[in-house]
Image (cartoon, rainbow, N blue to C red; front, side, top):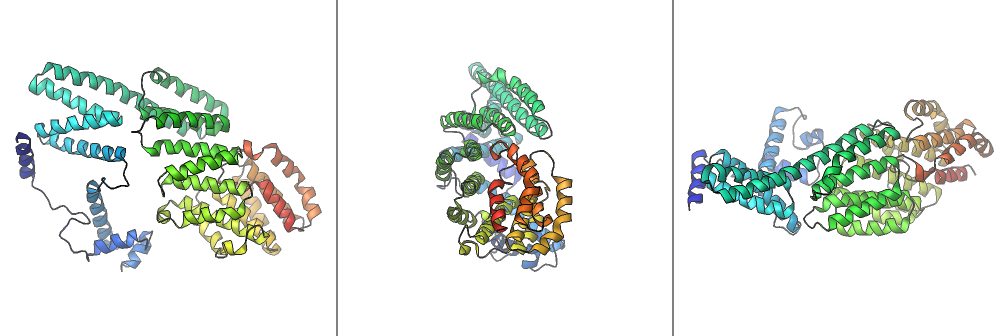
Length: 496
């Protein structure tokens, strides 16, 4: 009863403002903010310009539209604490995690308002949840505050010593987790601009920082950063075999930790799948993909990543006719429209490649009858900011389709622009293979589409391409979806 009285006192003193969420408010469902919310969730618009037009405002800068948008944002934020985690979509570990985080937020407010009894009760619950879920930061917060409570308010020595020891324990674990996170972050940000030798030195330096904690700290958050650092280094080193071994070790570890969120070890599933695809081990890749499709939440980021890698594997194995079912599963998923623009770019590129293959007769025409080439060329540059990313693939597809459709005049007109692009953006780096292949393709219009002359002048670039096989390339798998060797075969077929 003392706890209830103290809680009632806090609520009475501070008043309870009307809880203005999307459902729990006195406003009418027909209110404009509800209309905005319903249209947003139905996918009626994806930009401010579209939303303002649909809702009847002159433009996105209109003060009334901006006010409405702020109201919706506030109500959505107010609604977050009331999400029902008891639904079947949440695992037991997720339910416990969100409950614990809600208790932490409530406890901070209660301690700030001097409501000690209900705060202590919550702190013990937080500690119980945190120890069970290995939430070191929450456990440290709870133990530290309980330690202060028994030191300054009750003077109970045994309880004070109990929570003091827990505070020290979780302080060390939190410190180890923080160091592991900083090492992973530092390596990731510096290694982007470093050469291989420098990366190796930096990696070894980061591992030395973690070495003192490896035998004494066993929290899954520490191990996640540790394994993420290693796999990041292996990805940059293009060591696919070691990547598979490291991911296998990580997955064994995380499966021994039922409290670890699936999101953590899903990342190692994807890394492993990527390694098998790059090694051209289709049987192992198929096995990992099936695990991803079964274990990962449908519509999650890593679920999409798994399907993307699987489709790329099918392209590389020339199993073109089997791509459509997997691609349709992605495109028709309810969450697809909410994916980032890069995901949409990749899917458009896949559709463009299928269109090219249909022109060659490699896949049935009806499999891709809705593709619009001009629309594809207009859409991708809107999203692509990285001139060394998807734009390379778009450029290659454009050349391939113009060759196949025998639009020689259009291709000849583009030679100067394409050469300028390659000299400006493509270097002897991770895009070396793309550089070589575009130089090969440029021989087609330069040699007046004469097959023998094209082969003769493309020979130096063909030989250079062979010096860096696809399996050893540092380029992104998203750029070279179909191996350039396969595409060159198709170009020669087009030339008759």
